[in-house]
Every structure is written in C-alpha cells, then in structure tokens.
Length: 191
Image (tube, rainbow, N blue to C red; front, top):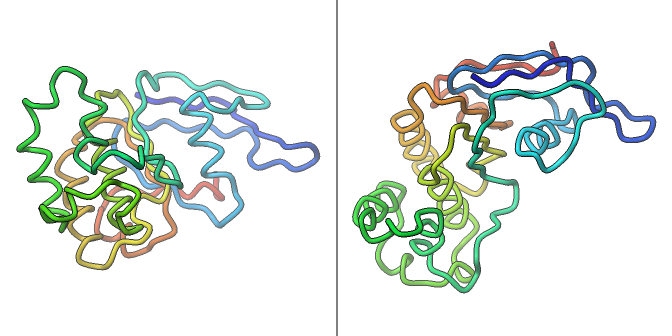
C-alpha cells in the first residue's frame, strides 16, 4: 500500500500542493487541472524530487512512464522493453511481441529503431516497458498521449488486465481514458 502523509511541495513562493494525504492500495487515476503538480507528485513518488514537507511510504520499486518517452533511440521497441528483464528477455519475447500486436504494432514497426517510431508507437513502447518491469508500484504520467481511439482502448484494456491490485497512479487529462479504465478517480484539487 502506498501512503502519502502531509505532503507539501513548494517552488519558491508557489505552492503546488499542501498537506496532501492519500492512500493508494490499487489502480487509480490522478486527475487535476494543468499546473496542479501531478507530474511533480509522481516524481516525488519515484524519488526524483523531494517534497518540501511530509513523507511517502510503501512505494518500493517503482516502474514508470514519464511524459517524455525516455527510450534508447538506437534499440528496437522490443529491445527497449526487454532492457527491464535482464537474463529473462528470451523467455518473455513472444509474450511481449503479443502485447505489441495487441497495441497495434506489427513486425515492421518492431524492426525499427525507437528513433524512427511515431509518437504513439513510442508511448506504447514506454507503457509496455513499465508494465514488464519488476515493480511494486506503477506510476504513469499521461501514458496515452499520441494514441488513436482504438489504440487507447486496447492500452486501457491491457492495463485493466495486468494491474490487478498493485498500487498504480495514472495521471491523465483524457476523460475517455478515465472512462475506459474504470478505475477510481482521485481528484487532487479537492484534497
């Protein structure tokens, strides 16, 4: 279980959030207006940023999709995913390829280096890499950017199937994604 206790984050005079308390024991969607601090909150949970006050417990090993894709451009989509599976990449290759097919990426796309993939294909790769990474908590920052409606539906279905009861925080503005996921929505501006 992921617990956020009295978390405050300030940048100079600007306060993004103050005294935020939250418990996450399964998949949930983070929703708040732009500029509220969803990305900063996820970065704090990942250990990439520090809060001004408060603490976080229970994150453990975090897998993430960042707003930018952070792929190795010279590697293929499949190689980018198997990076998180050292020693096991051959064992899961067929399953990972099946996941890519479910998300609409054919063999031709999988043969390209990540630098030549479209924006939506890069997002699918980043999403699958996070799903395959061994983790205790999954943190997803706008993971559906650049996906067409069919791909979004397939990606949401895959997330619903794979996430189970693991703590997942998915930040998005996409109301259709929220509807498709069917996860509880945490309205951060109301906390």
